[in-house]
Length: 113
Image 1 (tube, one colour):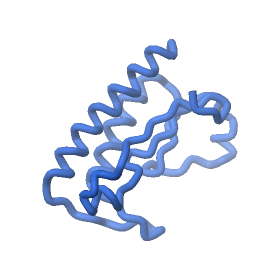
Image 2: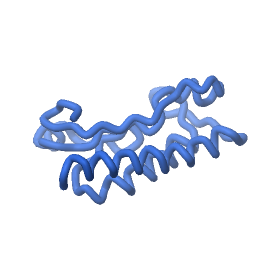
Image 3: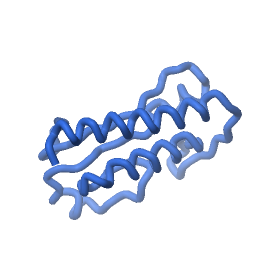
């Protein structure tokens, strides 16, 4: 797949996830906590689902903090993969400060391209 097509895919994923996240942001939502005591909202889960669904068409692996962690011995063999954080700044999201982002990077030999 050409880089321009991959960029378009990432922009589409971010835009669709962003729409869903803002709908949740502008409503009442519950907060759960992960094993490491970091917060998790439905927006994190929904953004992750949308992004992974869209990026999966590229056939590159996806590494996300909201997915099951893939063993390092497998990951270290990946030459190209998606690295995502569906909502970076969940605390800002929860506090409705507006300080959060959706992060998507295409990694090539562990360098974002």
